[in-house]
Length: 124
Image 1 (cartoon, rainbow, N blue to C red):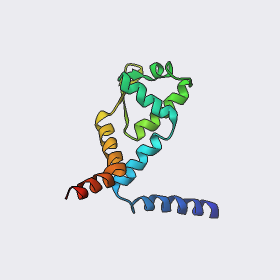
Image 2 (cartoon, rainbow, N blue to C red):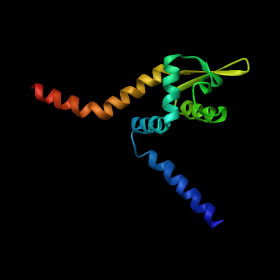
Image 3 (cartoon, rainbow, N blue to C red):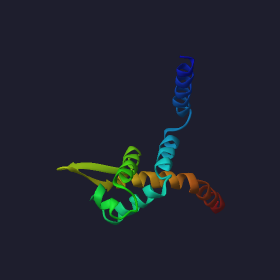
């Protein structure tokens, strides 16, 4: 019983810690976590090259099992990078280009905002 209470306390603490950060920082961390595996990066590349593919079509392009690719697609969907739409007995996956553009903006702001500020400051 004591262990369960301790475990819940750690979980509650982790949940409350996110509230200490800006929503854009939390969103970017979710995207980074989703892109934290090379298979998921490859899946994004596959879908960008040819959108609207089933899991099996993606599996055919990867050295991974169907269940593994399905798990990776689930992670990408959770991060809003990929959409899935039911079609008959399959799910058709595509990149959410609106959210991908938002993620790109978040990365640009993180990595290049200081450069832009320096260039702007040097112009004056």
